[in-house]
Image (cartoon, rainbow, N blue to C red; front, side, top):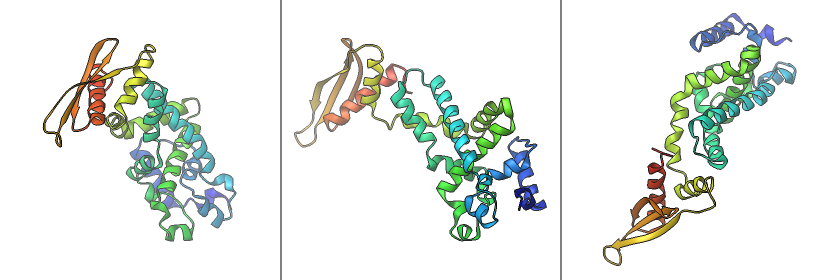
Length: 245
């Protein structure tokens, strides 16, 4: 059986509605449909495994990572490779990508075998994430020489809020590690942390930390313990240096 024979009028309308809603125009509707074909559906209908979304997923994964890498490379110019990698990993995680798929209505588009459907496969994080990457792969192929730009634009246009919100994630990373990586990118000197003072009773003290770089105080922080005060001082330094907001 050919996969094109399984595209009913109802299915075709779903795909066309999806394209219209998200500014896509596939001349090869089978390719778009393939992005939603889980292996359980393929096996149940005796189709070749090459008709599942797996190969498209492989391609789309690369498109996704390159798009996000390029965006972060331009946006966070003061960040070294390590933290750019952490930020990218946050965005391209199955958890995030499956949420993108839900936003686009994939739960109603993914084709599953009967057993997988009974198990709630259309709501599974891994299946949604794989299908989303497969769609990026399909866009890349469909639009030929403009494929990467179209896939990247599709990603940014529909998920700009989610992607740019990664800036908030920066504040949850280790500020001391970020500051150290930043300063090491300039010179071999490391930031120095100094206890500038403390106040309060013995069981309820507040510690004040200053962090310096090249003999200049670049940040200050306080907390109920020295470790947290040091992190707060590093975060203050990152803000003062314009690395985070």
